[in-house]
Amino acid sequence: MAADLPAFWAEFARLSPRLRAPDPAPDAIAAVGALVDRLGDLDWEIGPDDDGDLYFAISPRGRRELAAAARAVIAAAPSLPGWRWRATLPVKAWDGTLDWDVGPGPTHLDTRRWTATLEPDTDGDLVIVTVAGAELAALTPPLAAAAARTAVLSWIGEETFLARVAHVRVAAGGARDDGVTLPDLRARLAAPADTGEDRFVACLLGLALGDALGARHEGGLVARGLWALLGIGRPGVLRWTDDTAMALGLARSLATRRGLDADHLAATWARDARWSRGYGPGALAVLRRVRRGEPWATASRAVFPDGSYGNGAAMRAAPLGLWFHDDAAALDAGAALAASITHAHPLGLEGGVLMARATAAALAGPLDLARLRAGCREPAFRDRLAVAADLTLDVAEVRRRLGSGIAATDSVPTALHLARRFDAFEPMLEFAVALRGDVDTIAAMAGALIGARHGTAVLPKAALRRLEARADLEAAARALFAARPTPTPARPDPA
Image (tube, rainbow, N blue to C red; front, top):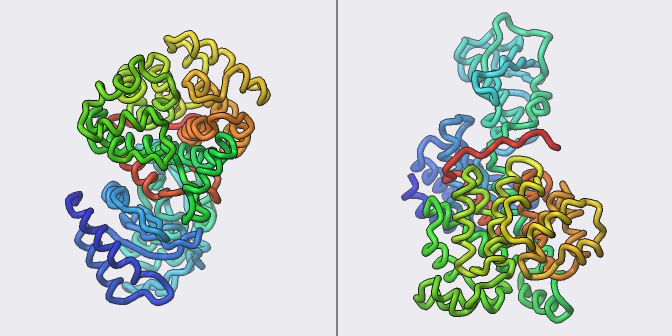
């Protein structure tokens, strides 16, 4: 199916203007149906999203064995203005009635009075739902099973169904008083099994939000004015900088090459580098040399004979922590190699490795700054991480003792301090803005860590709706998750 996806999305993009309300073209709708049919046994739906865009959902019909195929289709989606992509059908308002005219028995079923009992499946993250209702007893067993499954799926939504439900059964003996009513079932299952995919997505979105929201506060009036001018023509869009551009390129390269391929990564960064993203002059000079065909190792040393000790390697390192989270040795080697493409100074390398380690740690639980400090080789990082463990420091103390500059030592420990100190995104950003200095990079690193720790629920929804290329970032994160070499650790209880 993968080979068909570029053609699928190219044809959808061509049809998309004719699919929009108030008068979607019937032939365009039929053409989308034919496109989806060629992908296999998947369903689809178009409807209004919460933020005023349209969504296009590819649905596995509640079948877990098709969920990966649906996600693969959505992971390949392009960025189309006014559209959002879903790999499951959204939950909709429903009156709880089914017009069930598919066989003998009652044709109008009121599921609001049906009840469900839950028991663990052999897979401890999933449950077996046993449904009881007076009308079910009047249906043939196959129709009763289909009606019960349809009702549960409709009440709780496809995403929760896939994440939590192993099987739906019909209770023997008709209606029962025990159990939870189906309208309350979704709340009972509200905490879905944590596969880790949401935290991969939140990591990249948190990075991009910190970057975009911090960029407007970085530097003096001239720098802020220039950044505002670069965003002309895109009112209301939260535009991100080189921090996100390089992290996005890294995530895509890891997923495409199924691991770290330094030559492919350097070529990807070189291809995507644009001065209008706010690249530092040194990094841009290195990448321009690579674009002209010079090997990245010689290009880096030609611009920085002793290597750069800035925070450029750290600002983009989060995808490495996601990819190598379960292999400490591979993480360290990969993060050092990726850093050396542009930041070969020992302090620049250490900053990149430290940020990758912190991202891997955030997937598993609260950041243990003492453990991260113990793994540092450079005294400058060890000293600052000892200070960063004090979560009572005020803004002036953080600025003075940890720093807020572009050097890796003046920003990575600060970002780790903020990520450990705050569980929510907004107070972290407020503190980062108050620090002044390299606001976008510090907020980007802290935002990535908060996202990896807590998931998308802690990211500000209004800002997400305005984030530049959000669909591209989500697709890259999901592709990275799908291609990952090891299972992602389940999130433990909050500490």
